[in-house]
Length: 253
Image 1 (tube, rainbow, N blue to C red):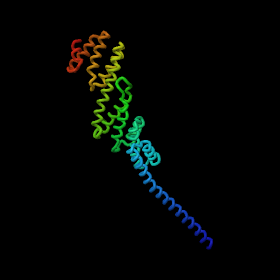
Image 2: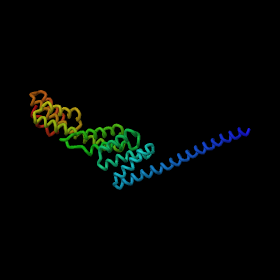
Image 3: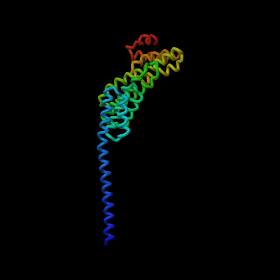
Image 4: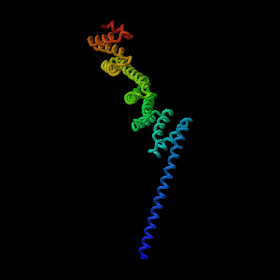
C-alpha cells in the first residue's frame, strides 16, 4: 500500500513538472510574440524616417531586416514596396524594377499593386535612350505601362500610363525609322523595307506612318518596283492629306 502511494506520488510529481514546463514554454512564446511586434514596428518606423530624411542606405537596411527576419508580418509587405521606392530614389533602377515586379507578382490584389507596376515602368522609363540608341529599356517600360492599363484600368495611374504608352510607341517607331533611313541611304533596300514595314504593321497609331509610306515608295522605286512604289505613294496621298510628304508623294503618282 505504501509502495503504491509512493509510486502515485512520483507520477503526480512528474505530471506537475511537465505542466510547469509547458506553461513556461507558452509564457515564453507569448512574450516573444509580444516582443516581436514592437520590434517590427520600430524597424519599419526607422526605415520610413531614414527614407524621408534621405538616408537611403539606412532605410534599405531596415526594410531588408523586416523582409528577412519577419517575412510573415504585415509590415513585411509594406517593406517590400518601400525597398523598391528606396532603390528608385537612389537611381538604382534595375533593383527598383525587380522589387516592384516581385511586389506586384506576389500581391496583385494589393491596393498599391498598380502603383508598383507604374513605378516598374518608370524605373525603365528613366533609362530610355534616344532613337539612335538601343531601345531595350523602352520596350520594357512599354510592357509595364501596357500591363497597368490592361490589369488596372480603374486605377489613378491608368490615364497617365496611356500617355506614356503613346510616347513610348512613338519613340520605338522613331527608332525603326532611324534605322530604316540609314539602310536606305546605304542602299540596303531590303533592310530598309523591313524597318519601314514594321512601322506600318506595329506602330500604325503613331505619327511616323506617313513618312514610312513615303520611304517605302522611294525604296521600291529604287528597286525598280514601280507599281509597288505607286501603291505606297497612293496610300500616303489618300490617307494623309496633311502630311509634309503629301506633295512629293502626289508628284510621284
